[in-house]
Image (cartoon, rainbow, N blue to C red; front, side, top):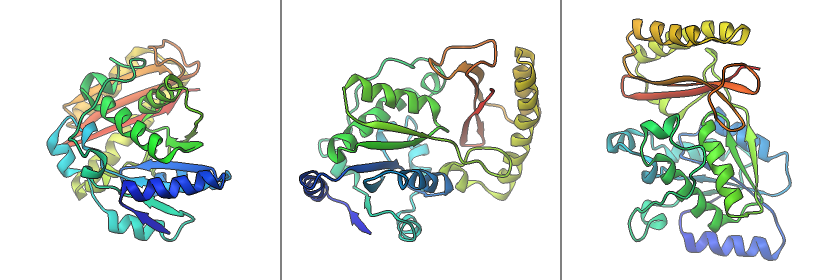
Length: 277
């Protein structure tokens, strides 16, 4: 397994791949590798091509400096985990490699915006599309793999690919969930023992109400989730909404819909979505 840290080196490698007509499967990550990331790699293994995992904690997508500083950075442990898989190459550049002239972003995608996370993390998706476009231009994959946990992000990246007429197939991968039914997240590795216990209780609240939402959706159930979470000490809830998964519009039924949820457990932002059909 090769570990590449320089853009000049990855460009040379990609050039050789292209000359030999080898396809590339890209799995972008911010590290702190867990079973969710490994499921993306497993999915990539089903396709022809050379698998490249990128590991880069992208400062451009953090609207809170403390959040960036507290994000787990575990490159050595990640390399150890990935060395036991079929990963052929890790691209792990520094911030200076990616942003040699300083961190700059632009609003490249306007669709699927001004809702959900975009209302609460200003500039976040501009940072996401900036780094994804940089990676796509550098690595020129034929396929790119994303999990459904960050569903709004997935839709925005699909739009980014469409707008730029890129011949890249985005492969959606179902969320890998823990024993409580919540999607895995690198952020949760920072939970204290007490926070883990609170997270479990929050998950149980969501799960119990999720059954009711699936049976007969109405806003009283969403209000009940908020009420129960607040009664348990969750004071900051960004949103609990049911939206159509095709265009992310608000929905009043369970046809092609998902329950979207985002709240804070102390300093950690918990986001997830759940199929309702």
